[in-house]
Amino acid sequence: MEKEIPKYCGYFWAGHFLYMGRCPANTEHMHYALQVIVNREGLFRLQVDESSIECGGAIIGSGQPHQLFSPGNCHSWIHLLIDHETDVAKTIGRRHLGEGKVKILDGVLLKRLRGCIDTPGNFLGSCGQAHDVYRKIVTELDGYPVHAEEAIDPRIQAAMNLLKGKYLSRKVAIAELARHACLSESRLMHLFTEQIGIPLRRYVLWLRLMTAVQFAVQGESLTEAAHRAGFSDSAHLCRTFRRMYGITLSGLVKNSQFVQVISCFP
Figure (cartoon, rainbow, N blue to C red):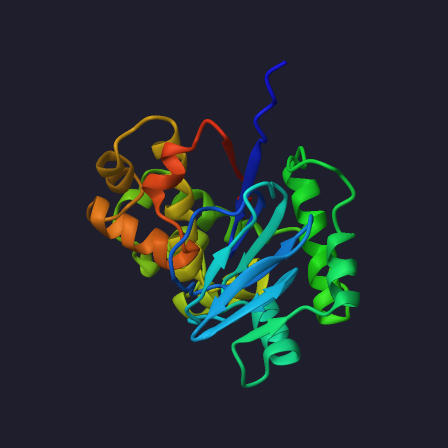
């Protein structure tokens, strides 16, 4: 009987990317986002600067160059990227990184993080379950529970709906969004960050990247995906994607038959 090919899943929402599956092929890279890595099946090797460290998990700060080396038979990783401008990323950084850029997870914390997922595979089934895993991980790392999500203010929802429409493919004018939401520009920016947990312009970047990925894995060219998501060209899209996630968009598209990409944007 032919062995079943493991399925891998990536869940995107504002300021966050939760990936479950095999460690992607990677060269030395860095992320703007804070990264939490957990190998659910064993150890891996983390190359940071001139040091090579064997571990089961790590927290890597924004802008820290690194490379991951995974055993070939390991298909169950947790990669959580959290935009470095969010309060959650700042809190995790203060508690676990301090002035440093990397923390190797000790055995106790590693065991607790592995326990945040109680399913054997890499598919969680819904955005709600992905959010639950995220909340469990953040709770373990911060030491306090993430506050329950409140209903989004209708004015902020109106602004997000405009962004996710035709507006996404052109330059974002804060003044126009503010008028649409019946708010002043300063109030829109403040309330958006308060409600969504990420500044408006960072939200737009994550939304554009998610939109481009969806078009690309559906078979559109990288140039077309870039233009439809508001990037100037495919080179701009690919640079931004690699800078944010540490892997190439072309590599993701090449393996799209094995990877399910799920948008969890509100």
